[in-house]
Image (cartoon, rainbow over the protein chains, first blue to last red):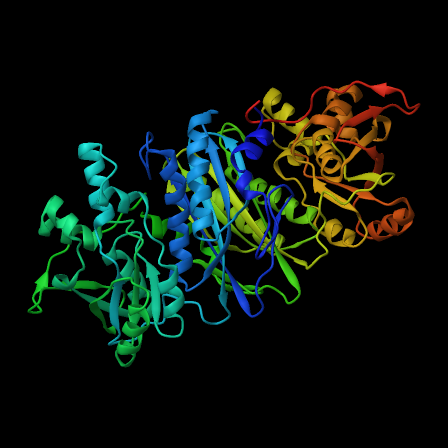
Length: 318
Length: 318
């Protein structure tokens, strides 16, 4: 089987244009129509075997996780996905692996109405890079630098589950529980992101850990921030698996939850909570943006006493 | 130095939005404005150390080559570059390497008015994936499937030089001659691609070798094709280095020349040659599209006698 046959056999689900995809796989470029009045949003994430996922992970999940991590960035801008480019380096031709990988990716491409528009298949150490293309109404994208002093800080869903899932996988090698699903299949909050356009003052998705990522919003906005530790949304499954203290630690600095963190001016609080209530996604107010600063994030307990946090977040080059 | 500092130090040239780039590096997504009436063109190419370039290659050239290969795909659609996403996996933090890499990339980003809009930096075996975004007037993109029986086949520049350059590098380890420059720094034919909109019936860039790539046009158009071997444009430097016979072989099946191959209806011949004459890029008619077929490409000599060609083109999984 050569490269072209491989693409035809395993990435056939990519071939058909439709919706905004005017020309799909098979030419020098794919072509998209951008809806009138919209800007293009683009993001890229790479997943390296042995660094971002275990080498013997289920190929049915690996591609979906890469796609969802990128969709999460699109959600965090308030954008809607148009399609994605896939660059995959494969160490060898492995039919079974490719079938699982392709089946998982095709499932999610359909689920999120996000067709595979092209990419590159090469031989090399297993590496998956997804570049996600989306559209967002011009001027309405949710950026990081719009937070103001006094804005409330919200997060979607529960935090720390992904770290808990990875821990359970590493300890027990089991991949079928709630936590491991939260690790492998994060839920991109596309509907929340869209609903927040015009309401949230800043937003991002939590990929490096809450403290580090909220620090990005604070820094970009020239502020500091404070997190109320007892308000952190924790799943009962995570608490049951590792206890509340460890759960809170991972909620603060575990990476790859891919939940949204966003800021809301206090006067819009009711409007935002009403708008999100219909979407069936839990959102929790966990803190507040504080006066002018350089992105320092402090944690306090329910009484306002400082809580020490470990240096948070994953860093490839630390 | 952590990941964020690394990006700030070495990819600072990416930071400033301008032109169609509305929001650059530093948020969840980059944002682009697409000129009215234009479609988005997108393409992705991966370069793996040890597969696509020598591991000890000059970092000043490696990034430029990856960028140019992608720009060549944009040129082949008749599109104009908007910007690019860079995903790079690095085995270690190497300051000198990163400085060279970044300097080369910044040079070419400026040269081709193609800003770095975002990407991902991870630790892993050295792998560079570029996703290039471009814009092309809606409905005017140069596709592969528009060739008709009797159309003339053209190529830009000279062919086989890249293979010759790689050969010289491997044999002599020298990197400063004409041929090695042709290998490292292919010239994306953006002006030619733009000029061909509305004139060429099909186009692509030659990355897998002329025979294989012309076969793609023929197959997509439901035709066959014939190449007149004596018409192939060969550089005097290539002939001097390896002789005419080897030069012709590489012109037919050596990869990575990144010249354009395009087809032109005979009645537009004069118009096309006139339009391209002003651009200072050599173009040569090398063959013709023949009757209905499945993409078979034959070679003939000046008298129309068949010339045997080796199975051509590079294939990662053959």
